[in-house]
Image (cartoon, rainbow, N blue to C red):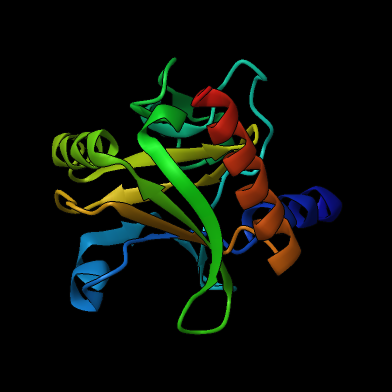
Length: 175
């Protein structure tokens, strides 16, 4: 019994990536707030399970969020924002020195992102990259930005690999 609890605790207590926007720090602090926190580690819960290979990179609405077992949450079939809405991806360091994935949106992506966040106030969204849900932010207000920062998703090397793979996919998509 203790062993099962320990395994669940390890899965639940991983550091969640934050879904942040560049620009206005006050807006960042007030705009996004993550779901329930693990009191022992003070990290919000995260989904780290691999999802079906048919799931493409993007930002998805969450159809059903199960707070008791977030890993069983159900995503929309298609992303609301996908690679066609991204312009570039790169690795940057946040103000605490943590590696962060910066995704720049094109004009259409920015408009879609604003509409998506406007329609999903007080609801979670899922960011899917390389077949994994890397972040599940709750949206507190409509967000008008052409940059998305996702932190806490790995080491500098892991974040750089994700950025490089996204850029390769973007080049392939633009051909």
